[in-house]
Image (cartoon, rainbow, N blue to C red):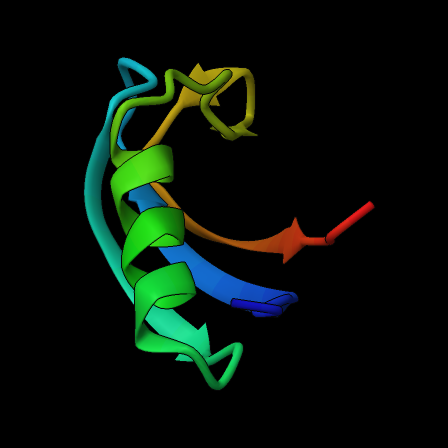
Length: 69
């Protein structure tokens, strides 16, 4: 199908490292790729951000690149 591009996903990562919410910040221009990016990050586990040494829920922007080789 020739679809490729970068999706910027904003993810709310909880203090335990699980993603609570994921939203498209910048679309790749292809709904199929955008949906795959959201589904992908929702299954990941993260190292949570810390403030003063204490893990806290924080939003992070994650670029997901889809490239055809």
